[in-house]
Length: 362
Ligand SMILES: *Cc1c(COP(=O)(O)O)cnc(C)c1O
Image (cartoon, rainbow, N blue to C red; front, side, top):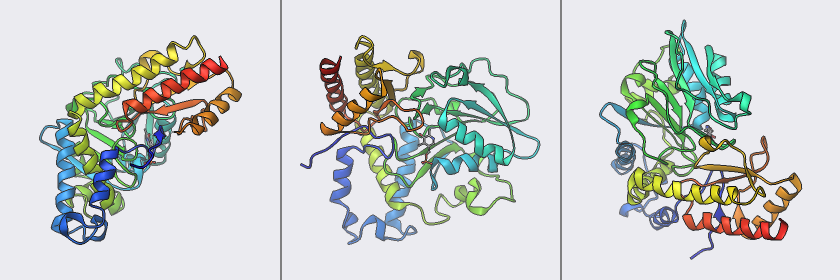
């Protein structure tokens, strides 16, 4: 077997080895067609069955009730930042955004180009090192939707619960924690995520939404940016990112094999506990960045006592086969992204490396 890196990349990120190997086995000749899945028509029966299977698996894993639909779109979660207000933030309405850090702010900036917005809650006062309490939200009557970023990938925070928004649609960017834990889908009206963190390779963005939200886009916006175009055409209005969708289907199958969302959640909690305990029990040598109750189980951010020693940590970790431990350039420090596909043993190897590094430098 090839050597596998201890991969803590934030995105694109690790994909389960089993999935890569299965994809490799059917790469050149997909199901006896004499073609790769990348080489065939997206209107043919072979591709369409993969497309439909991926949608069904996703709804099945989420336990979504009847009335939810999956779209496969392109342009990343960043394109959703624009599509959401284009489709829903119509004249006379305002869109609520919860400010939690880097990604929420990008979503807000796009919405402001389109229409009126308000900040429903913010953790700016805490430098985004926690998530705001959403229990007492006042939602204006003319709110088009409330937008929440479930997991801030860069800061390393995560919501553990979600607000009840009544009749106002709750829209959640789950790019960095989708399918990492069980969820009551009924509480959400639209969920979206770029695939490259927890679902597979980059190239496809999934949208899971109540069907009624997807059926009536304003008539003046461009065809390809309308949810109703993709809804009516089962995400086959234009050529979909077929290989990425095929890979997502494989990852979904792998999640089913891990025991679905309850199985994967148990594993994720075990990995995150191991790493946070190593940080908390280092007598201050490593310091977690985020308030304990807001800590992300996907992106673990931490610091050392100086930037020099952080640089040393990163350099030596790379020499030992660890990848992606440098924090995002906008916040510095260290970050270990431990998405679904990062094995427990990889996290254990990091914890052992950290202990050894502290022994030599503490
Ligand atoms: C990575 C990320 C994005 C941006 O995704 P792209 O697919 O690169 O557009 C948006 N939101 C969150 C929470 C992310 O982690």
